Image 1 (cartoon, rainbow, N blue to C red):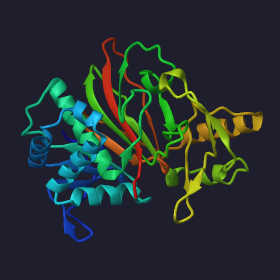
Image 2 (cartoon, rainbow, N blue to C red):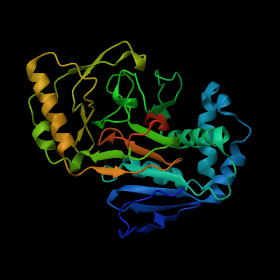
Image 3 (tube, helix red, strand yellow):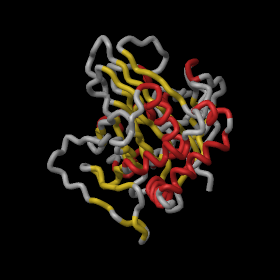
Image 4 (cartoon, rainbow, N blue to C red):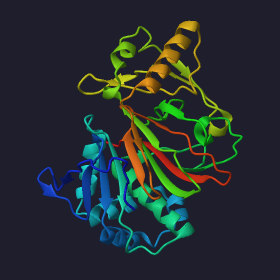
Length: 326
């Protein structure tokens, strides 16, 4: 599976070394329209070795025994002589980058259907636990969530609404756990056109300073969630809840779950949402089946474009959200 691009003539720079060490078992390129976003491809031999290394465990084993998630991660990293973990961690934590697409060359892989999905769950688990620790996802009742977008939907949030744009946002606004990173992997698709992932780096937002310097920027806002999220408590925190080591803002915002307490808060949130959606500096990224996107949740915003209508549209996505462990 190779990440595809509309920019046919874009130059993709092959990166062969990191911190003086050659990569083992994977390659890295810049995404055609942004050097912030890296494209990581695991070689076929790496995937074959990973399959063999974790075949003794089912996904159920990994769900029931949390320590296995770190062992799965270590076995993938060991196959690459620990160069994969070093690169992924450096990339996702560096404010100048902070995001990568990871896919794999599947020429040696014969799994199809549910077996292929089990492999993708194991791979996403490995990548997530190389970076940190996945939080419990109450919507699905596991350390990850799987959900499907279809032609008809009666849910209570935009997550499954196929024919509208899901606006740019950060994850984890309504939970008490810290959400440093987000991983999203496409598991399946049928009769699907459109629905590209949307991404905007905080430092590329033209009006960042306008909203970061606003009197409400560091004032608590109340955040809740609809019933489908299975989270009954509300939390309060500012949109710009923290600064990084260099004093640059970190963000925690989503339009759907903010609960303004007065007109001033409502106006601030409304104008912020309008500004984000009007900003031209976002990326529109297609996601082939099996590909995962991993981003730093506090200086990248993400969303999803609308799908082209089809009565039998079906797309299944896996999500892991977690925090750094060091």
